[in-house]
Length: 229
Image 1 (cartoon, rainbow, N blue to C red):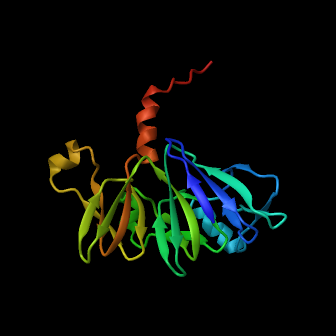
Image 2 (tube, one colour; image 1 turned 60 degrees about the vertical axis):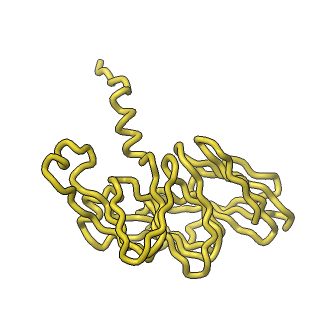
C-alpha cells in the first residue's frame, strides 16, 4: 500500500488502494475517493468492540473502504485539527497506546480498542484521561497528533517527565504514571499544574507540542460573549 502525507498545518494522507486492501476510518475523516471505491458502514468487531471504541472517542460505526473492481483506487483522509499525521506499520501483536481521539484510519487488520488507565491518579491528574486508545497490528495505521511531534527513545529505567496533555503515543513497554510537582511555588506559579506525567522506559514515546485543550484555552478569551435578549 502506497501513501503520501502532505506537509501542511492541516495535513492529509493520500493512499493508493489495491484490490486486496480494505481500510477503515473514523467518522467524517474521508476527504475524497476515486469512482471505483466502495464504502460500507459497519459496527466493526461487533457491539462490544463498537462500545469500546465509543469510550475512546470514536463513533459506534466505522466506515470501510475497498475497490469495487479489484483495480487500484485512491482515497484521502484529512486531520481534524492543526498538527501532524503519523504512519505506523505495526507487526502482528505490536501495540501502541495513544491519546483519545487520535485514530484517523488503518488497514482492516489493525485492531482499535479502548485502553483503561489502571490507576485513578493517572486519569484524574495526568491530563490524558482514564480512557486511551490501543492500536494492535498487523497492518498500517495513521494517527493524528496535536501540533508538532518530538520523539524520544527511553532506555531501561530511564524516566521522562512530561507536561499535562503532551503525551501523544507510547509503546506498550513504557510505564506511565503521575508525579506531583516539587515545591509549593512551582505548584502555584509554575504554570504546569500540580502534576506531571512520568514515562519510564524501555520504549519509544511521542510527545506533542500543542495539546488541543491548551489551544482551546488560548482561543476562548478571544471569543465574543453571547448576549441574552
